[in-house]
Amino acid sequence: MTIQTPETSFPIVIIDNHPVMKMPKRLTVLEAVLFKQVCHQYLESGTLPEQLILDFEETEFMDSSGIGALVHNFKAAKNKNVALLLYHTSPPVMAVLSLTGLDEIIPITNSLETKEPSTASVQPPETHPSVSSWIKRTIDIIGSLVGLLITAVLFIPIAISIKMDSPGPIFFHQTRCGWLGKPFQMTKFRSMCVNAEALKKKVQNQAQGAIFKNTNDPRITKVGRFLRRTSLDELPQFWNVLKGEMSLVGTRPPTPDEVERYEVPQWQRLNVKPGMTGEWQVYGRSRITNFEQVIELDLRYQKNWSHWYDIQLILKTVFILFQKNSGAV
Image 1 (spheres, rainbow, N blue to C red):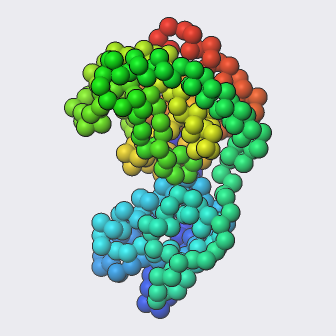
Image 2: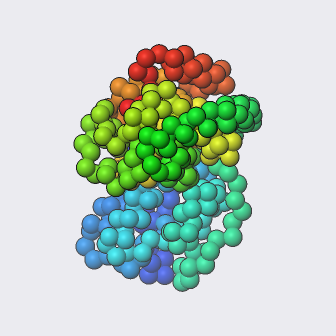
Image 3: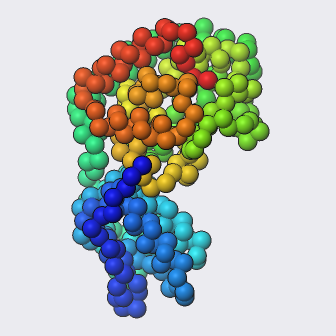
């Protein structure tokens, strides 16, 4: 993935004996890569101050890459016992911080002497046209209602099969990261043993990068393999779509531990809502073993997105589900 160098230097000035890093007007992938680099270099240099202040007064836009760089730098500063503070957060920046919950993690101040919370108004950021499209949202609502109706019809036989095959709950709840990295609880029909998360570290990861995959994962139950092969385990996700946490079509929803391993450019995939299906589902869901391939598909979806493109991917997904060995492994 090639990243050009942006025309900004992230200067650090001293104000009232406090080091203040001036942030640019836009903090997207080009600026975010350099932001992480400059901040890390500063934290590795000589005697460090008690705090480093990031001045966001002029910042008009920040996307997922900017969030990724900010999270990286916050953790790096914490490891050096340096307090990272956000100063003069503009309304667009405050909107992103509030949406992702970072406003409750990273201190925000309107004064260099006190950590007063910002009172800036919050407006949803425009990271990708698909996020604000009312047509796409309408399709999601209609599709999710139809999907939930199908789920209700199939619920009893699926629930009985899960219970007879493996004692434990019918549903599996897992924290995933959505738009801009905001965490949400994704729901699926349980396809693994009840202690699957605890056993994960004992299963070999056959994939490369920030994804986990094992073709013969021993944690999957017999009924679970059928549910995964037919994608029936994903039916409860229609509830996530109805709530607006997911979309019918989007990118693959990552887990927080996967996002922890992201480099700044890889955060770009979080500029759209995660989907029940997408390019990764249609073009090699079971065969992809390299995270860079996931990134390529996700960015291609963002580039090619249109309402008609979403409909095409939905139709292709339905067709693929009736093919042998089309589901997840």
